[in-house]
Image 1 (spheres, rainbow, N blue to C red):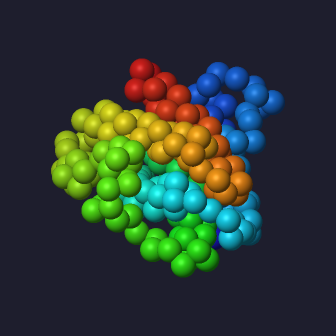
Image 2 (cartoon, helix red, strand yellow):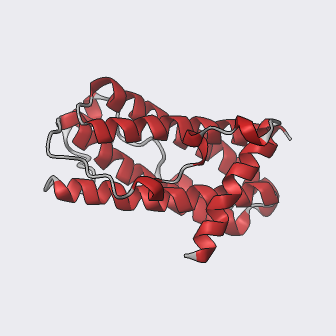
Length: 198
């Protein structure tokens, strides 16, 4: 637990350093972990979009955890390793929360890839198993670029999912969470772009 806190605590520092701003410029949405809101109960009113969003993001973040786990051990840039570790800690907390909410609603925690509702909304995660597996075998010198390219697209996909929820969802807790997801991923995208261009 102590290790997770230390890694998560490093994220605001990286945000500040990467964005070239002072400490007062960091927003709560960029630095608050899902652990801080894990006790929020979703209530019993929800629609299909709320369920679909959570199921898709559960699937999406399981993929993200595979990628960030690889980056923590293989990143050549120390700042990228710190970012990957911070993302990993936050998304583990978020994953636990989303699964708890779906279980509370007596809904499956895994995405149904055969359900047309997901496909109709373009909701199936774009990152494939082959791409994730390739991160483990790409040469060390090429790893950071390969990871950044893949994870940038991956987090853009999360932003799109969050937009769908904030537009069409009905549950306040889930919509608030989707807003936090959108803002935190946008912050991560900006950090990754800076790392890519450094």
